[in-house]
Amino acid sequence: MKSNRRTFVIHTAVGAGALVAACMAQAQPKPALVDEKDPQATALGYKADATKVDKTKQPKYAAGQDCSNCALYQGKPGDAAGGCPLYGGKQVSAKGWCSAYAKKG
Image 1: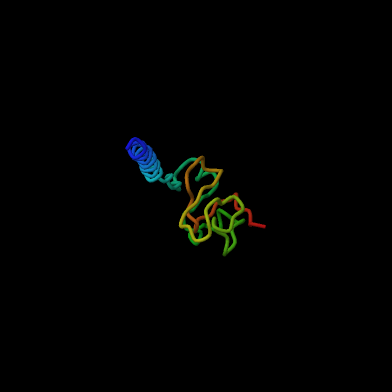
Image 2: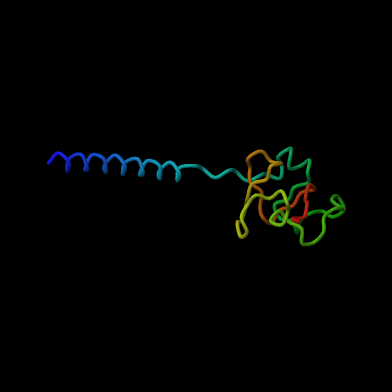
């Protein structure tokens, strides 16, 4: 009878630990999206929608360039947004663009 009680206690402890770990993983908030008015974003000419880049102010921009195909973009293919080291833990739109754009090679 002792081994059954011991087994029950061990399984209960392991199950509770797994439950706590799962809850903590889900509770982590997603990083905020970069606001175009953010000082860093303004300095780099960031636009959340690359098709709205003012080509007179940003002559470096070319059609087809966006964050999702930039070497700095840390999102996965198909993600709507992903991290960028230039914006300190915030996410950029996959369809966005800034003057630091560097084509993935």
